Image (cartoon, rainbow, N blue to C red; front, top):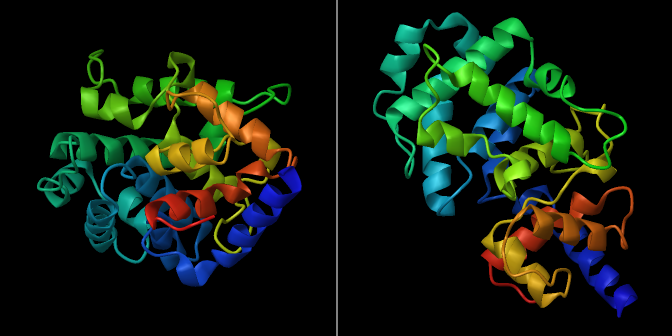
Length: 260
């Protein structure tokens, strides 16, 4: 049974190549060649990767149109007033325009102070961690600290951007970003090679949860961090060093209502 499932998963992993990337927020990362631009748009795309995929694509199209050929150059060369003007009408589900503006001001601070998001994230990880959980939790806490204005907590929309696995969140969007940055294949970029792929956790959304329940990769009912860990551990039976490689295929099997 396990061999049969591995064969199926490997088949779909190989079948979902770059020609089948759309519609997916990942398609926007492939518009750029500069690693800094890929990282910035990757983080941005992951933050907005919730809700209807058509809505996600529309929002990211607006953002990339505003930021132009080099999103990092746009961010570093724009003052806060320009960012507020450019994004004053952009909303996404329950992100207000103020939330969106706050996100890009936070990211500008990070690129000015740390050079890259990776440099900040690597400060939060320990080589002894069994997976990415502790680093991700510390990173989210730090991001919310940066978001504080005049000692006031960030608004609900900004807090949603930076979930915490210690509070049981599955952290789908952050795990998605980490998959794009850490893994390396035709779809993912492998820009953060300091993090081992075996420490990644699968990004669990409704599609992934439903398919994994059907495949008996999880017995849990609630899509939380424990479910994400359980699915990842079961996928390690098929690839112990790169279990999250199956994520894109599993997600799109659910999205496109394909048979497996």
